[in-house]
Length: 368
Ligand SMILES: CCCCCCCCCCCCC[C@@H](O)CC(=O)SCCNC(=O)CCNC(=O)[C@H](O)C(C)(C)COP(=O)(O)OP(=O)(O)OC[C@H]1O[C@@H](n2cnc3c(N)ncnc32)[C@H](O)[C@@H]1OP(=O)(O)O
Image (tube, rainbow, N blue to C red; front, side, top):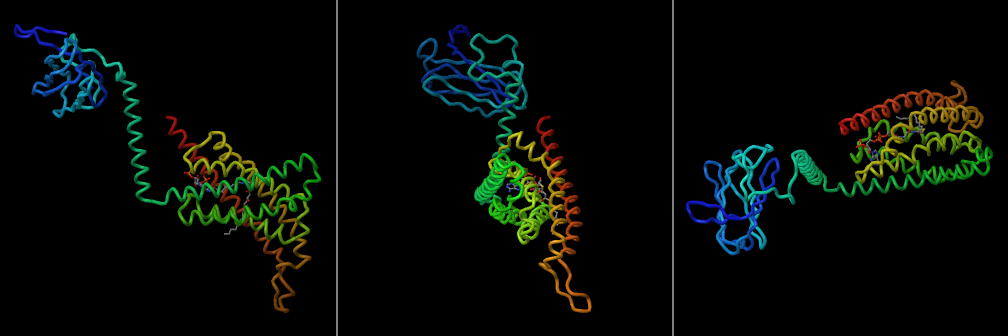
């Protein structure tokens, strides 16, 4: 392409342009360009001059562009075998209506469709870049703050996986037996699943230790109430009284415990790898609403059924001096525990309700 300038023919290369909010990109169609000279004059005009192979063969090519708005003085360029790439920073981060001050587009200038974005796409690109930058900063600062973050996540992932497998085994075993044996399966739940339940509930003690070590953001008290509450039922009420072990209440307690856990542990596993499945999240934050009160009622029934057995067997009774009577039955401790249970129920339901509120508030904020 040629333009007339002071009676001599000046060769002008094809120039393609695109913009972002912060910068202007020019692609000058000159291959093997040498002696590239790009300068910016005070009137905001870019002067380009170089030798290279353009539309009119090997020659000197030049062009000038007076920009629509002020640009920064530093200009970056890179010359390759095929073209010269030029990057100019805008003075102000703003979308321009066109590139040049003159309204009529110079003949040698055209949009660079390889880089072209309209304003809203460029905004989205800017936002994505900003999010990526913030993510990088937060990952870097987390790594700087805590070099063991990978190890901790790995431990939590394995812990949750083991618990998930344990509770799934219990749940599937009980469900299959229920289908095959019907009501009869109620009576030997303990003998078929207690070992696995012992294992899972002993492991669950880690859930009280984890927040103390700062591994999870769980409150210490709700975790203690949860784990201690279940372990009293499992080890003391069921485990120490053979008479309790073949009662149908064991079925209801174990079933209610395992239903929630087959959703809660996979939810945590996904959280460890930074993922969530909406359906699983929904179940984790909603299933407790019917299950928790039912679980506490089932546990309370178990405690009430065990009271006369403790009275008769005198197991765990506290021996008293003769003046105060013979001994104090453990059933009194359990009656006090019944009161604590409903206090524990209240604390944990409040805790779970708050977690649910927080989760859905966060969700809403993300959506808007
Ligand atoms: C002082 C002596 C006390 C004596 C006790 C006397 C009272 C006894 C009362 C007993 C009542 C118990 C009844 C109970 O046994 C009945 C039942 O269980 S019935 C079945 C239904 N049950 C449930 O639904 C409860 C399930 N359990 C829980 O939800 C938890 O155990 C609980 C502690 C209650 C709440 O969990 P948490 O506080 O951890 O909530 P989140 O799940 O939201 O977690 C908070 C953040 O920490 C991250 N986290 C937590 N754990 C893990 C983990 N293992 N791995 C990875 N990440 C974990 C989680 O992702 C959350 O992070 P973020 O906020 O970033 O999302």
